[in-house]
Image 1 (cartoon, one colour):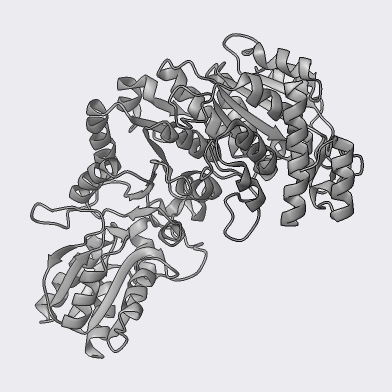
Image 2 (cartoon, each protein chain N blue to C red):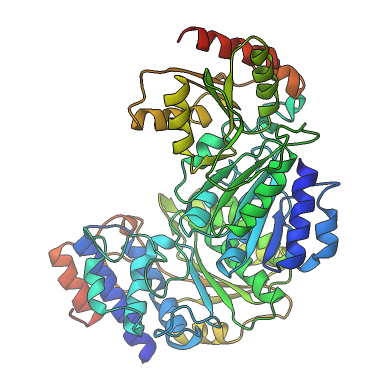
Length: 268
Length: 308
């Protein structure tokens, strides 16, 4: 139930924050809310009172436009006061629209796609060379997988057997201008990644048990980096956003905000 | 110069296990000693400059000093966004080294020229821009670069650059070196074109034109003090760089003069024109084509001084 509680809060706050900021990308936060909830509840070894703890797991949100969702999890975990959430996208705000390392608990700033996995791979190879036990997670989007730099790092990670590196794809199959299959079809993705010598597992990215099982059992294979393809629905949890391209851009109006709260069963 | 850089880096790496080399399948005949001495701190990422920079940034974020390395514009332009967003925004301790600044790889063509690098790199917040001009500067710049905590762009020469400094040098990032004094003009250069400028200054000396000859090995942060002083004391500033006319050393010096209200002096930029170079030839031949032979530089300096 803890997973559902945090995921619901992530969703409700993401709708509220983007509503207040009149900002886009709410669908991207809703899509990954269950993944983020399990990561921050059970999987990531992080310490809110010591964000720079050397032995922490590193988590990089490569789809930096979904910052709102991660900010909620960090606030809930106690990395920073919850009232910061209302400053998202505001003048002199604490929280920018794309994820920023100036926020406690954020490992790395991203925004332009294709940056997260190379940096995560650099951290992973350093950890290997220094015999460190922490893991490095990178959460990617469909659009991330269009970028050549992502595939450069996919090749690098396999070459160096980085089994401390875990890529998670929030595979909602929608990108900025439409359905991924109509723009750059990533399929057959599992076969591609296996051909690139990654260990691959497909899960339902909204099924807590499947998420927990997959992320608890990494590396999926020793000596290989792990790629978890999480099938998700963009805008998940808010009916009028679900599986729409437009939720990459639109934010909820007053009426829609109340409707979203009702659907989620929370009021902030 | 690239051999001096590699040898100096190797010596530094023996004493500092934070130094990594992350390169993109370039460096034959130069990087092997590092690779053999420190296989755990050496990565060839393949022909993938974006990943090279991202990997280096990840290594730097963990407290290390990675050096990215390739030729001409490969480690800067292909991966410019990684340099901007990953390296500079995080103030990551990544050192970006290019071999063959300017038109050092002349006959290879424009794809292998690095003629916009100073302008582009110095436009990035947090970035330090170094362009050593001879082997003495190259060695000292390497040491200073590793000692400095933060992103640095290091524009290295290619080979057999003749000495400019006759005495030992005191190399400090951000502090230019006066090679010789003079009162008729301040001639400020950066990088390996400095040798041609030196020959020009020597030639002019025979004609009674005494130049203050300054090595601006650090293009950013630029040594404003030495520029202002030279401008006030000589009344003429000429910059010399193997770089596009736009935004490089000449631009940086002009910014200093403008901000200091020193607009009543004679100024001239000696640089490459704002064109895509399609002429084929060696570095020295190309320099001559664009007015940067010793004679070409001397002529421009003399003309400028005569206008005072």
